[in-house]
Image 1 (cartoon, rainbow, N blue to C red):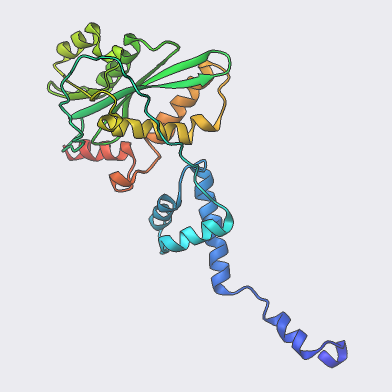
Image 2: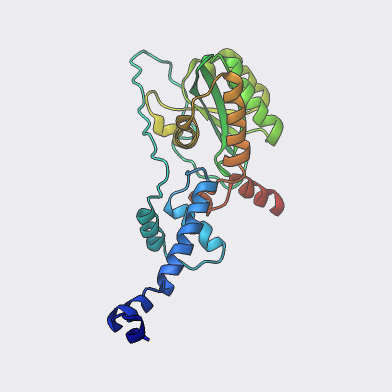
Amino acid sequence: MCTVLGVPRSTYYQSKQKTESKTKRENRELTDRIRKIHTESKQRYGAPKIHHMLEKEGLKVSLKRVQRLMKAAGIYSIIRKKYRPHSNKGKMEEHDNLLNQDFSTTTINEKWVTDITYIHTLRDGWCYLASVMDLHSRKIVGYAFDRHMTTELALKAVENAYQAQRPGPGLILHSDLGSQYTSEKFAEYMEKKQFKHSFSKKGCPHDNACMESFHAILKKEEIYRVNYLNFQAARRALFEFIEGWYNRKRIHSCLGYMTPQETEDSIKGAA
């Protein structure tokens, strides 16, 4: 046949060998699945979480292979912007640090942490998100969003958490030393609910590391990726991120690759 066609035998056999190998086909199919998981997470997942999702689907693949294929395909998670605490040289009244960087828990509604972060909008300028996290489930159990950073904003977030979770007396709520949390009105609320208020030491963000971590994730995976037109647009986006993604879909390595909602449900189901 080669003689009739006038094609050298070496060329014919080389063309036969160009059929895609099994390994190349598997890598191509695996890369397609990796890209789909990465896209579904809105580019938020890196290799470890994608590897876990693949194993959850029944695919036996090593983390190193996932990392290698992602690098070859140019698939990367969003780079996190590092938190830089601001120095506060003013004098401040001392408050008890009951938590003392002990973030361990045995069940939900034992220890909550709370804080306020800034979110910029094009038309309405700076807006403020107050969040409350349960340290056991890492779930955002309450939050509030407003154009002003007030004691009422901080209280609304905690009250929303209380209405959703109904914790008993003795719960530890940890915050920084911001004026919203050291106010008389906030102290009255804590006494009424019989909560114990714990405070970070001055200039020590590590005392509230879990909440700082959530805000870093929020900014890395959502806020730094978009420009919000106004307060209402930002509020809708935050609701979708917290309720639709972070609490119910985003897996956490510290939770054994479960979501916060799955972790909470497992506790309630065992009760």
